[in-house]
Amino acid sequence: MTFKVGLLGLGTVGSGTAKILLDPAQRHPLIKELEIAKIGVRSLDKPRDIGLPQDRFTTDLDAIVTDPDIDIIVEVIGGLEPARNLMLKAIEHGKHVVTANKAAIALYSDELFTAAEQAGVYILLEAAVGGGIPVIEPLKQSLCANRILGITGIINGTTNYILTRMKNEGGDFADILADAQALGYAEADPTADVDGGDAADKIAILASLAYGGRIDRKQVHSEGIRAIAAADIAYADSLGFVIKLLAFAQRCASLPGEPQKLELRVHPTLVPLDHPLASVNGVNNAIFIEGDPVGKVMFFGPGAGSGPTASAVVADVLNIAALLQVEQVQSKQLQLEPNRDRPRSLDPLLACRHQHDCDIAPINETVTRFYLRLISSDRPGTLGFVGTCFGNHGVSLESIVQTHRQDGSAEIAVVTHDVQEGKFRQAMAELTAEGDRIRDVAAVIRVL
Ligand code: HSE
Image (cartoon, rainbow, N blue to C red; front, side, top):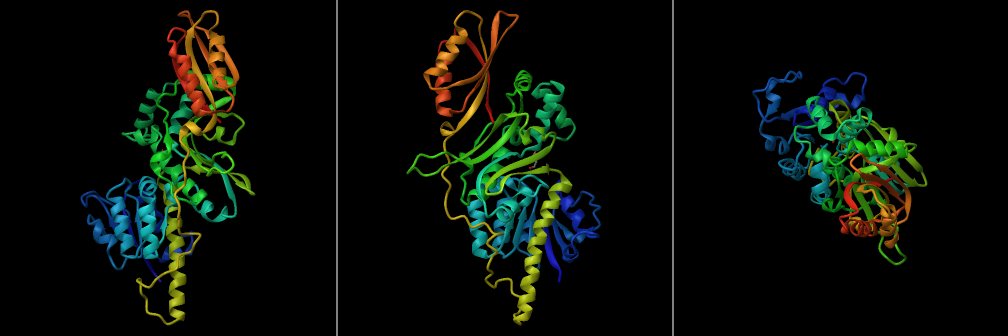
């Protein structure tokens, strides 16, 4: 029983996938039953020495997703289009889809999963979040008995690499980004990574699985790491924190009778040094999940790269192949002719069937601690003024440190207690309304 795979894309993840499929020794025996029938590439001119004949390569990706002989499409071209269109066409033609495409899944999940449900096919996406780290299937299956209380993750390797180096070397963001680009750890266009969009796509996907509903990706609040200064990393260290780009999905505290909302946000965060996420360094990712009754579990590992991401892709392909194998055996027992068009009942733990839209809280309703660094005039009453502005809006201060600077100004680092973001912003508006005392708000970073 051979299952035919159509591979869309032979970049980093596509080549890693082909490498596993073409070298099945000592891996799961079902890999031997998988055949790469076609590979869709941008150009046939590039030499490809992966050990497959030239006639397996084509630039006609439409022909792959409509090929009646192909059972499973692996979409690893990334980006929104033509990936979305190709996946929809594959689904329409009765093919299961495996994808690493977090952006397309986060934005078009409703359309894609509705089409898949109607066609009776699976879309599996373990590789879309956390690269090689198993987290999608654990959320769908191993943790499905739990009420998920919250997910907190380092789910972007590029930013974690940059922040780790900034901390270790005391360097500035721009210099380390440039070096990371030269070394291949950051893309030439780093926008999606450093501005938080990539992590927002991923947390939208995790939240949808954890809370069993559709997420409007546009409502995920995201901030990146461009504004993080070496001074804040040093302050954080002296206060017992490390700065990480974290993604959060959790239920908001709701008032009796009010509908429960979800908090979905991505932003740089001061993480206490004794928190398990504080020691996740370099390009590694980690996803910390709290469930009732499991408690706290953390998934850690390589969040990107050819081998790790391909490991997740091939696991999904194998899951589908195993189901197809069972289907074929049953058809044989019932003496049914092989027929891809026969209605198929999907495994409810493997398929995504979300029927409602999650209600997402505006960022102003979320509650967190804040760290802020102010540059102020160094004269009597300034600290009192800061305390009064916060006090006027019910914001309680946890710590405050003031340092005199050589130019005669003062630097004030403040950490608040938990406060609703809207109230904190009102206090900040009052604090900065009179430009004379507070000369600059150098940093505002949330605290875990
Ligand atoms: N660009 C992503 C990261 C890897 O830096 O984590 C792919 O999801």
